[in-house]
Length: 209
Image 1 (cartoon, rainbow, N blue to C red):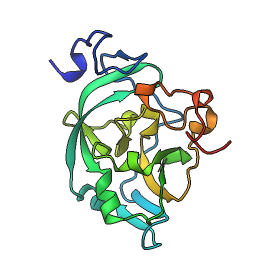
Image 2: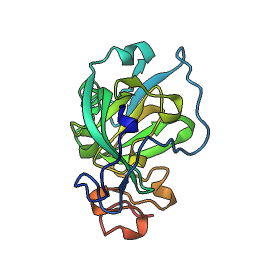
Image 3: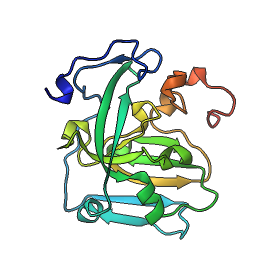
Image 4: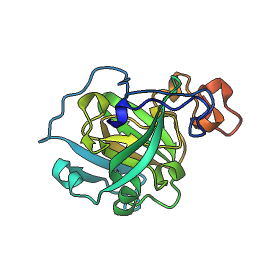
């Protein structure tokens, strides 16, 4: 029986953050249309406050040649479903940080995706060993609806912090709200603290509006 066909665990499963329920299958939720992948023009960029003050870029072949890793991690959607025990394969975010180091005073990153979608993260969350620029789930390439060719997976945050169709990472010296954070979602998005909405933020949780 495949991973998506297994019976979900009971709501009391300790892997489930508060308010979440395990979901059979993997719903495809996103804002806007699914972009068309163009391998000849696709690239992944790292820019902003890099240590060298230069932009770094990989074309599709260059990106797929980077060292690859697999992590087992759960995915928690702010709409209150969780997909448990997935194996994500791709390029660890730490590889990008090594190949394109940030300046010493960088504190946050903005991850950019197709159509200008963005999600901000603390540098520590992006550098976490489990954070991965995923190309495969459970041994199969991501579908277009789920983010092919690359989506970010940040296991310690709600899933909106892991954009589909990633195209760039911007190093920042100060925090700045991303797409959903500007529209009322919590700046930190810790599912274990149930940080869903900006009205729950405490002083210091995010930049001023």
